[in-house]
Length: 178
Image 1 (cartoon, helix red, strand yellow):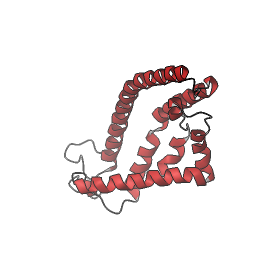
Image 2 (tube, helix red, strand yellow; image 1 turned 30 degrees about the vertical axis):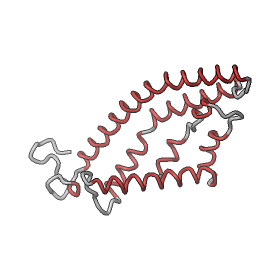
Image 3 (cartoon, helix red, strand yellow; image 1 turned 90 degrees about the vertical axis):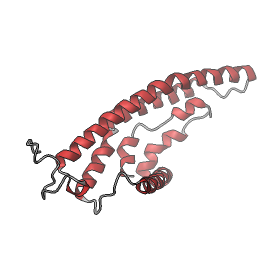
Image 4 (cartoon, one colour; image 1 turned 180 degrees about the horizontal axis):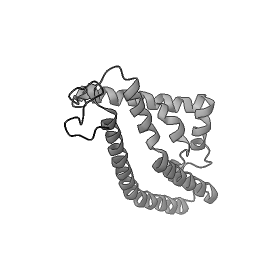
């Protein structure tokens, strides 16, 4: 918000720009950098994973036909692939919702600022994130709104690699709360 170099990084109470004194402009810059980084990382990960995954699906289909197990249904597989495409597109366009929500919480509700350089903070954050993921998935089986978002994951008639792509397209609108 300040354009002068001598004020950059200072919070609303002055401060040295440390975690407790970060201004809104600093956090918006951090959020924008995270969004850019996430978009680049996610795009590269998908670009690398898609050819490998499609190869493995083709290999599984060949083995399925050779063994006559019939675990592939064309309509079901196309539906699963479509769900994966929709889910990826929604994640690309709406994945930023969580970052903006976290930024708002950080600015308005965070009672303490944890040091990002401390490895103990990252261990606790990893365990806490895993706990949140567990509850997000559990609510996907018990709470109506979350169930409506999660149920597509369990709708396949077959169990094959295309089923792994059967992800929700509305998860970005519900999972940010965790």
